[in-house]
Amino acid sequence: MPRAEFIAMMAGLMALNALAIDIILPAFPNITADYAIEGNSIQYTLLSYILGFGAAQLFFGPIADRFGRRLPLFAGLAIYIACSFAGAFAPTFGALLLLRFIQGIGAAGTRVIALAVVRDTHAGRDMAATMSLVMMVFMIVPIIAPMTGQGIILLAPWPYIFTFMAALATFMSLWCAMRLRETLNPSNRRELTVSTVLQGFMLVVSNRISLFYTLATAFFFGSLFAFLNTAQPIYVEIYNLGARFPFVFAVVAVLMAITSFSNARFVGRFGMRRLSHAALVAHFVLSVAATLIFSTGPVPLWLFLTTIALIMPLFGLVGANFNSIAMEPLGRVAGTASSVLGFTQTVGGGIIGAVIGQAYNGTVFPLMAGITAVSFISLALVFVAENGRLFGVAQDGAATKAAE
Image 1 (cartoon, rainbow, N blue to C red):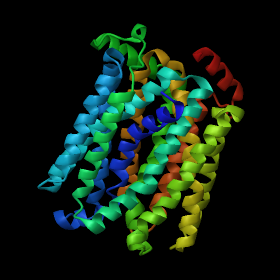
Image 2 (cartoon, rainbow, N blue to C red):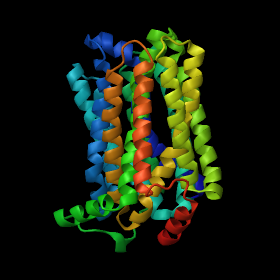
Image 3 (cartoon, helix red, strand yellow):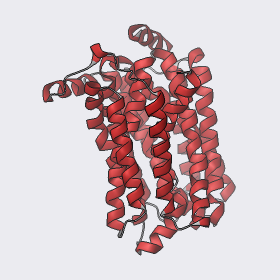
Image 4 (cartoon, rainbow, N blue to C red):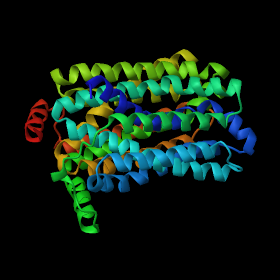
């Protein structure tokens, strides 16, 4: 498969997850009105999906290491398609939350398999560069998904958003069926027994680099999920953007895509650690400054947008590199490693983001304070992973040689 098609396919599989999160954001008021939801409960449509998505990765990983990449992928896509279509007919808010949970289970297969396939076929900085390009395409989804959701709402009732998700997943299923070969080396297949699964999990959690980078990514992603939970009420309720919300939201996604592309170009020159550590330090410093400023009272829209435009794009320099660093020592159990990483990052980040989101009180201060807290914790975990040394280019080179 040509490299460009491979990157597009992996990004498309991972984008189904981002689509399920971002496309419903403009529909929050419509869903709230139809189901008579009170308070911040609409945020549970994100949390229920994220919990299903995160938890199921623990199962898809060992299955992918036993049966290969294709079979679990198509099983996950089938679940995603069925629940997306059923979500359009959910009779109650509780039923919608259940379907979102199961939809997340299906999406877990696409995430685990995409990461495992990249690890099957790449190593070292080449893996980080490929993952950055995948993430760059993946970042385009938050640009177009809210606009797409807004467009669907303008033309039809909000349940058609779920029909659209089912249609796109069907397209991805057909594409993968025709073009994606099996990438798991037969010699790396593992038996699907309790002992081998536990052994695979232990290989992940007993490796200091993998464990602490996974935890650091979970906390770091908590700030992203917090932003997703509160973006719609902040833009619409505080700043009265109304239907313009998806377009302002897209600006941040564009900047995140740009930094992901920049990471793919510069990671070979500067190394995964130098780029990601510098971005994490900058993220912490900026979030501290923003928290201090926002603690004084209401802030104008331009200041909030400037702050978000500086802080959020740093995910493009952290996420892909942290995932690559965590996966680097675990090539022989890539499926299991991907599932443990995905579970910890998604469930952990989702719960952290939900806690911060539930603190929303009509101001932007809780969001910025939460971002500062999780940024500090992520930085501390990286210190532990690297034995107190940051910006370690030498570690990058050694890890790459070991993987190759």
